[in-house]
Length: 574
Image 1 (cartoon, rainbow, N blue to C red):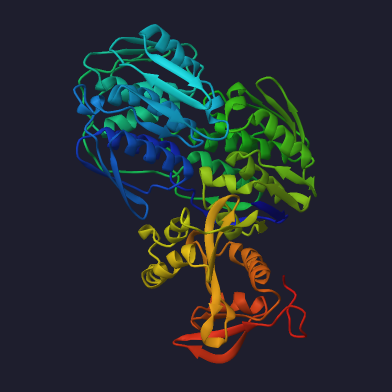
Image 2 (tube, one colour):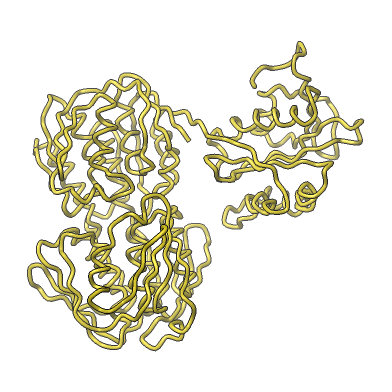
């Protein structure tokens, strides 16, 4: 999906989504526990879905009710029978947290696992684990985009460099209390991202696991063995990493960020302090404990009035994210007209009152780069197009809706295609309408009354069904055939867009493809459809593309017709 943004101010109140970092941790602790836990205020981003799917493979169960999830814990412990099961296959998507958190957990719970991922995930560093595995005699093999680990974690001393990602510490912190003896996690100085480690300890404490900490510099962690996680209920707080982008908007316009816990254990809570420091003309910001703040801080620095120079330092780990963020931040902001110089572990940014814009920029398939570009684009002189903008779904699925609600002016363009439906993929179309969490009774009714017709389309050559794909993902379908009752004229029987995509312009952009497909099958002839008159959104869409009411009804549905192409009443929207 490409998004084109017309510059203009943002304003209004916004509450960021629930914390992805905290949700990962609470869901893992609940999954390891004995009994049922309820975690509320969970946002189902792609990264969270990856963690949940992997935890299910490890032995936990999950059921959703809106943003609340009931977790049936696996009861992990030192004598767990799960260890006698086959190695699980764990697809971590593009989530570095999922991969690094679950490697030690899979070893402790199941004696190993086979890990896969997408994008750059399997290229991201795992050497701190591999060094420990060499020392502990644990087998690992990484090839062809797949990592296999096998063996048993044993109690003992685990030394980690303090300047690596806190995700390595978190994985061990979760796993070591399950072993049959005491252990020690000893970081070498300096310890970075300690706030994320504190968030892990907080989640473990909520589920009954003790973690003595030696008050040294850096602190050492001493998990007792033979501990069990106990079921508990917990609520996920708002996400400071996502809030940072709205703080950048608040720096530039009249935006009010609400619902934040100023005493949160989230490391990116420091954004509130850095925001204040911008107004005090601080010129250097240390990112060693908050690397995810680089993109929003870079926007603020690039649009710092008066030409002030800002340095973002100690940011080498940004090269190992979904993109090389030191390079991608530099490329995007400079393309927009900014003045950014990239160093080995830093960014030096000279501020401007406004950026030029008028270009197309790549999101680098990085959710934080896409959001950074969106904030910057609103302060440009000319429109900006962001390619691959669907990547925000990794952490903030409704970012573009919130952006529009705050006054952002954007137009979506999808990379759409049609795929024939047959015996191998017809269920994909059905599943678009049967997710009970969407609570869409109209869709449920449709499936009940028409699933047989959809199945028929997969086998009966008299009927045709096409899966509608956006950026390669199934988002809807069209079902059409000959309407024998009206002399075998073409009938667009059903045109279904996934309810999660409604209101985003996707339906209007896909309908021309469907009509062109019908013309390819039937020739340039009249096309009919039936629609409930009460479905005002659908009626308006069809009328926009030249369908006009015939004044007739088929049962309760009104009959509409689109003239054959080339006629005097033909509408040229296509």
